[in-house]
Image 1 (spheres, helix red, strand yellow):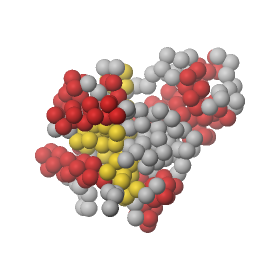
Image 2: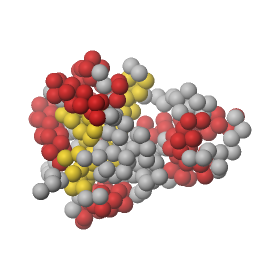
Image 3: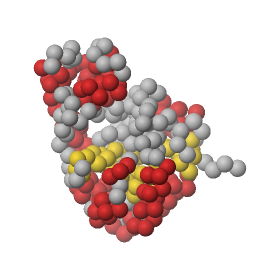
Length: 291
């Protein structure tokens, strides 16, 4: 009998995904997944709706969030798993981060306007709805206006690092975010490290509170995945994996279809046990019914 599968990295329109959180749970059910981690950028606002629908459908929804932090190479994405949505400290931190995202989107639009690009901030904000603003929202408007052929073109010509519309985002330190994640009873997993995932770099981030490494990701080759697994095992870190799904029209090298990667449920179980161990070691309080 085949093992149950999970997807521990996906997004809804609570940040920059295409679909509402409840629909993500529906898609997960359709993909035959036993569980997903909803890891929207800088928000947990979609978790409640996704979890409610997931409970109805028999799909577990792990509360998560994808944070951006400073790294020696620029930016590291960190997945917080088993979080407590609505926790005051977490909510305040995320509200501050989303405000910074709004200011960054405004600056990107201003740069594009100076280039003569037909784009308005109102369109970007409208397209994002209540979601945390990000570059994909700007890119979608560029595609809708016919300025760019598709999302890849928008990033390649305007919004990628070093391109004329790119604006650096203010980033917290890794230690600040891992301390926050642990303080609300979660664990911290480094996302899609790729070539940055050397043993030396991972040892350094482990010293700053890292609990695990996302080894299976669409941007990772088989060789990269195996290298990261070997390092994680050597350092005593948990492993994770996920599609980084944002929607059906935004696949490619960095994203895959929801549930498309083979991530066994045993990985989730080990992460959950790691969370229990970490919580006990730190003496964190956990609400009833959580790891």
